[in-house]
Amino acid sequence: MRVGIPKEIKPGENRVAITPEVVKLLAKSDIHCFVETNAGLAASFTDASYTDAGAIILPDAKSVFDSSDVVLKVNPPTLEEASALKNGSVLISFMYAYTIPDIVKVLEKRKVNSFSMDAVPRISRAQSMDALSSQANLAGYKAVLLGGSASGKIFPMMMTAGGTIKPSKVLIFGAGVAGLQAIATAKRLGAIVEVTDVRPETKEQVESLGGRFLEVKSDAVVQTEGGYAKEVSKEYLQAQQELIKKHIQDADVVITTALVIGKKAPVLVTDEMIKSMKPGSVIVDMAVESGGNCELSVKDETITKEGVIIIGESNLPSLLAVNASELYARNISTLLLHLADKNSFHYEMEEEITKGSLITYNGELVHEFTKQILNK
Image (cartoon, rainbow, N blue to C red):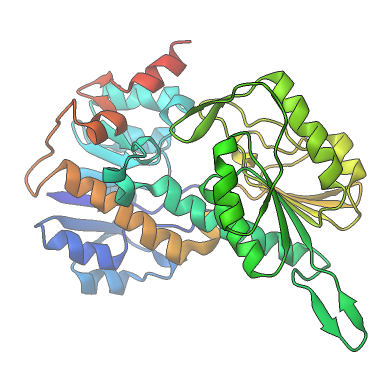
C-alpha cells in the first residue's frame, strides 16, 4: 500500500500527519510512505529524516496525490486538494465534515472513501486513535502558558524580602480534555484555579486536580453526547453567567474551552463581564474557531478591550508542532492499521470504529451525524 503525506497548506499550520518514526512503523506492515518535500520542516522533521526512515520524497502535492492509494492529512482538504485526489483513493484527516458540504460533494463525486479523525468514537478500544484528545491535551497546556505570558503577574505565591506576592487566580470554563489539562498546568505553576462546567459529573475530576468546582444551582437538565454538552437551556446558561460574574472580576487569567458539537460555541464571557474584569487580566478563548466563548474575541488575533487582553489563537496545537505531530501521527497510523492491511481496506460497515469515522464511501455520504446536520 502506498500512503501519501502532503504538506499542510492551511495558514499557520506547522503540524504534519506522519513523522519519520511512524514511517518506520508502517514499513514493518509493508506500507510505503510518499512525503511532499518540506512537509515536516515546520515541525522540525527534515526531508533527510524521512528518507532515512524509508520514505520517498516527492516535489509537490500533485505528485503525492498521483502516487498514493491513501492520503493522510491533519486539516480538512481544500476544494483544490479534494479535486486532486485520485478517483477511488482513501483520505484520512480531521474533517468536521458537517462544516464543509462543498468539499464533501467533491469527495462523493470522485468516489474518495474518507475517514475523519474527529469522528473516531470515544470508546476504550479507540483511545489510541483519539486525535481530538491528544491535540486538546496540548492545547490546554499551551493556553495556560499563553495566558501566563500575557499576564503581568506570576502564577505562584512568592515570599520575598520585599513582601509576599499573592498567587494568580485562573478561571477555566469547561472541564473536558483541554480544560482538565489547563487545570493541571495552572496548578503546577502555582495558581489558584476555579472551574465551571455544565456537566456536574466533572466535579470529581476537577477537584482531583486541585481545582475548585463552581457549581450552578439549577434544576435544568444538561444533555450530553460523547462527553460533550449537547444542549444547554437558556435558563441554565443564565444561572451559570450569574455565578461567573462573581468570580470573573477577581480572575487574572480566564481560559474558555466550551464547545457544543455541531453548533456555534456558546457565549459565556459577555461584554459586560469584560468591563468588570481587572485591567491587565487575560482571556484565552480556546473556542474561537467555533465562534468563540468570549463575545469580543477575534480569531487569530490578540486584542485589548477595556484593559483586558483577549487571545484568539485558533490553532494552539500547531504552536507545539513537534509533540502535536508525534501524537497525531500515532493516532492516525493506529487508525490506518485498524482499517487496512498492506493490500487493502476492510470496510466492515457495522464495526463501531469504521462506522463512526467513515464519512464518504463509494460516492455516497454515509456518516449519519453529518447527514443529519447537512440535511437540516
